[in-house]
Image (cartoon, rainbow, N blue to C red; front, side, top):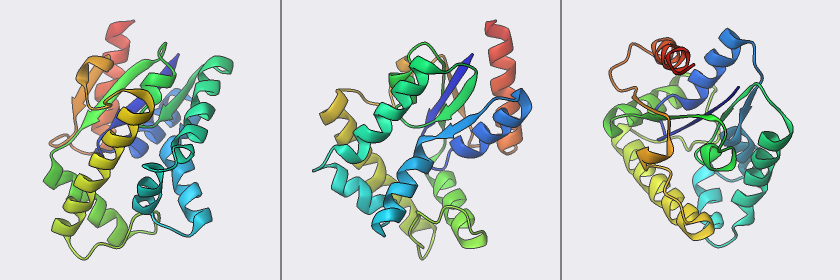
Length: 185
C-alpha cells in the first residue's frame, strides 16, 4: 500500500504523514522536505525557490522524477507532496484542505515557536503569512499547469479529501485517514 498526501500549505501534510508512518510502520518520504533542502543548498527561501521554478522547471522536475521512481520501485510507504498523487497514480490519494486563516496561523506559530519550517521566511504576523501562502499557492498552480497541465487543488484527483480546519490536531486527522483507508479495503 502506498499513501500519497497532498494539500494546501498549513493543512498538516507533513505532520500527519509522519504520524501515519509511525502508526503503520511504513517509511515516509517528504517531497516538501526535498524542496526545502534544495532551497537551503541555494541559501534561499522556499518562496524564492518557487519563483525560480516558474522560469527553471528543474527545481520541480528533479523532485518529481524522484517520487515517480519511488512509485515504480518501492511499495508500502507514505509520501507527502503536492503532486505525489500524479506521479504515483496507483496510490491511495489523500488531499488535506484547511481554511486559509487557520493555515496561516499554523504556519506562523510553527515558525515562531519551534525550529521547524526553517525553509519558511520569518513572517511578521499571521496576515503576512496568509499573503505568502496565497502567493505560494498561485506559484504552485502556475508551475504545475505549465509543466504538467494539472491543478493539485482539484478534488477529483483524490480518493479522500479531508478538511483539517476544525479537527483536533494532526492525530485526529491521521485517525480519520486510517478509518477511511480501512473502510476502503
